[in-house]
Image (cartoon, rainbow, N blue to C red):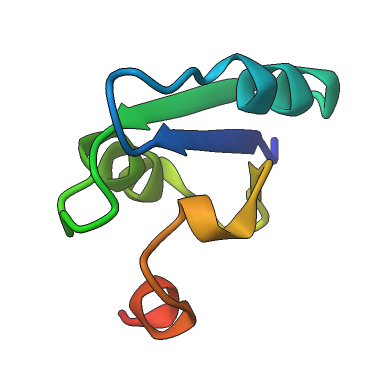
Length: 78
């Protein structure tokens, strides 16, 4: 069965994930992964975990595209 995963990230500990989590919950995500890590860091443990669980037919949702990475090229690199 296909799953819908959500991913949320904030770049400082002072920022809040609530708005992103609310959007992803309302979108019907089966599971939501969260990182609190600066955008300058290429390491995103929760995103790595999510990507490791993906199977053909699964969907990844984000509340804001720029939360996935520093740039479009960073997001689409293998």
